[in-house]
Length: 214
Length: 214
Image (tube, rainbow over all chains, first blue to last red):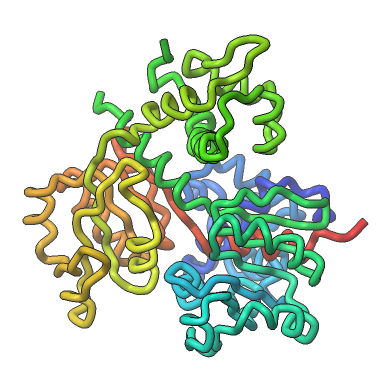
């Protein structure tokens, strides 16, 4: 029914979590069906973009009826891989790492956060939610037993630069990178989501300063 | 020399912070000039994209010489508005708000974080860096004296939905939105940077699960 994942554009994939969130909300509000036009209005997309996007996965709408909210939500949930879990580790137990570990609902995003590491003796042993901060020297041991495929990097640039290859050698396939180091794709098998918060803030700052009231 | 800000594509603007970071690094490393080809290699862009991007601002390169690193960094810093400050307020003093307030270097991004608000009595009065968490009921008073133009939202969806119009009425022109509520542009004068961390994590999860070793 759906195209192979290789042929789906990265931009469509990037919009899927947003569809998922909106459909969850509609479902919670007890709405059973929705037209592409209504969904478009809610999401700030065009109706034709929505039809095109969802067609990539075989389409779920019926002409003149619209989309079945629960069925579409369940299908996108399945496509996003939210019904299975892969292990993730977090490196860096400072303010940002702590916020990410406690604020982000990994389990709801198809992941299970299984360990947090730091190299700072003042942080090792601290409790973050259910996890105890481990010494980075135990990375090899933990990776060999827990087999994480995702690493969350909440560490300074230099540390990220130094750790990337070590983590890839330990089987990490994907990086959620909050460090200022631009992790470039080391190979076709490695996936990187760079979260450059400072870049986002600078863009906002620019746009506010340069958006004139007309 | 440079085009008016209105005519510069949003995509070029979005890349400027990245140029800025790379140029800062080169400068720190004592590198005085760089060719577009070398810069391209470092940044993972193409040389022609770099030349095109920088041409939007009047170009800074000399054929056969390359770019003067310090001059280009200073010019981008000026364009990004990093030499002046506008006031920002942060709403939501939970884990995420605390991490954003302490981890993000607002002053280096052209902003000054002047107040943090929450409606939770358990958080009001807490110290975050130099700031004391204020009761959200003092929002009007603070905005009228500090005149912030940017609001950082680290609050739940419902709270964001309810606060957006109130903040716009108080003169907020730009939102740095960490809430799950998709703030759509209320008008041409309002700028929004949505930071959907969960969407980013779901995208990564999908890509790792669907990237096959070939």
